[in-house]
Length: 399
Image (cartoon, rainbow, N blue to C red; front, side):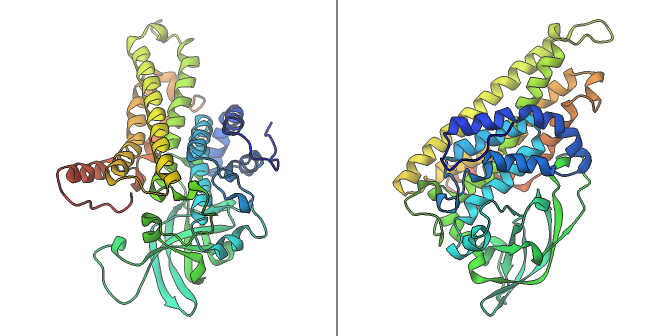
């Protein structure tokens, strides 16, 4: 049973307990959500009722302004039940943080009448042209996770000023906020992993977006946001990209934990067709130990990094470049590491483990699919960081 929201801000422990209480229900619903290729309405209703979308939302708009560590603990717990749910929560939930960085009028537009309204994305760039009082946005965007549950959307776009740039990172790259009436959802989500996320295509044809509903990504990167968020809250002084990148990697940690839980239950009872007990299979027991240790290390790193970021946020300063590059590399390495640790468990599950009645294939393919998100490209993050350590200038502004 989901605990309803009260007017009081709950403790982080209570919020995480609410998420953990949902795990059995999410495990039960996961096959249906895969079949429907989207998160079920009742699941989104449960997430809202538990207040999870309030974690990073400003208090002035009915939110809780809790620490990012709590947000990611909740995300991992939800993914332990169903990676698709953890993924969609991470995407939609982090948008409450991003909206707080916009002009205050944008927050009023979204939350003024309904402070439970959700915002979808994606951020890949479309084309915008200046118009009186704002911009006209056009394009087709892929991978809008959980979009059918949202009344608003964030879409990336580069403003065409008639000049040329080497890349969109040096251009007038913005996030544009649009209401549901200004875009079309196209059902394209027929995939092998993260099936339940409903990450559909979005089409916009010349929609007008007023200036106050745009946010310069340069401001997000440099921390010079116009910001509707209260200036006294350290939460909105965290580096934007450090929050966003963790939102698209942390579900893998929860998914690996879910796979471990399932394997312990399955493997402790399994006897193969040869009569061998899995509990005596040294490869299976080693795979289990390595996965558990890896989860512990990745969780500890996440918490350590956000503890360090909290110190800078409280002081109103930005973490040094080397710290931010370290944090990003560790973050972007999570999904690949989880997939590497999950594979031996999948193999040790044997022939019986490949059936849809078992969860191993779902957990494994969901984790692997996460690795195809451009934000989880640990190779480019590592190469850039390694070059900087040897004296080169950073080629990555998303830090």
